Image 1 (cartoon, rainbow over the protein chains, first blue to last red):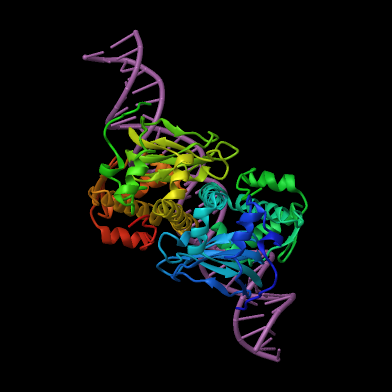
Image 2 (image 1 turned 45 degrees about the vertical axis):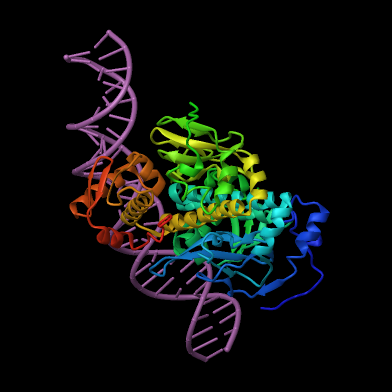
Length: 243
Length: 243
DNA sequence: CGAACCGTTGATGGCATTCAAGGGTTGTGG
DNA sequence: CCACAACCCTTGAATGCCATCAACGGTTCG
């Protein structure tokens, strides 16, 4: 972990429209910047926080990606989220003052460290920030409901198709290609997240490829037939995350 | 829908320790009461709000119970939550200004209507209320993660056992018996919530009864062997909701 | 060069769904 | 008061989807 005291501030951050500053005036952003100065580098495979760690900060992803997961009593884990730049990690730790989940970098990544007590105080003074925090909480709840639908009702192929479309649209929102991207997570994480096994996911990648829906080579994915893929997803990319 | 302008205020509400007033001083509760005056009666089977309704209020359950659910593009629904007195409904509607899910009474119920704009303003002035709102959001996120684990990884019997223990502990917290209670929802809703079919749930009720874990007659349930039931749940009643 | 991890593919089996039928309860209207 | 419809719950039998077990090739890294 390293601190990079570069002149990267919210005002010129590439994901400011997707992050806490969204909807804030320049003056408010200036105030926000005073508590987002500290950055942290997390290398691929390293943890940003672990289950049980005391809650002190939220983390805003500047670059890279993370998975977050919960651990059951028997040690079994469930991946609950793949997080991309602009998204906040640690929101579920507020009520218990302890992180109930852990977050691990899927690639070399960088985050802003947000001391929550300071954020709380500032939000008390800046209604727009307050609203943005509510909005992020609310959005996350909405997304989780859509994932519940996916896990509760959908077949394996539908789940994977929905995930691919979801990731595609999230990349697109960040200015990257919607049709071609590199997955940052291994098959096992995808499988875990979707409530499947790695073998099933691998078979589905093969099948989608045979059906000319995608072209995939390892983690390199190209969507060839978005309409077809959407049909497999049943347009249950109502779970579109953010799009 | 009827208004009951009785002298039921937060200060003497039976679920105040589980609801918004938790952690507030008497003075703050007095302020809160001024925006929680309006009550609403919802009869069994009626909707409190529907998918797509504009967001204006949060609702705090005073008595009864609700299910909330999301509807997919193909009309398929997924029950996402069973809500008991003291819990808040509508939090997922903030960011989109529209209810992404609907809430339906499972029995004749009563709620407090909380105009969110007023709640927001008050929270700006009362830090303890602000914190309680964060806490409720955060708690909800934490619970959803636990449900994801249930749906993603667990067998049918584990899911049902975990739900029974969860409901039991939530009733207990509200001063009712933890070992004997009446489920307010039909088997189909339980099945939908757990990602199963009604037939499977019914079979499990029978099996649990044969194994002397519970005694059940329709929706009337008595837990005979909490230890045994917990073992089936794998102590994955880490999804304990609130216990 | 070997270990560790990752991804793929095949064969087999089990668990939950699906399809089907029947009984109990509630509520309504003749 | 009875008949009938609409639910709700239960149980049985058969199918099918996905997990499990197993083996193997590729890549990375020490």
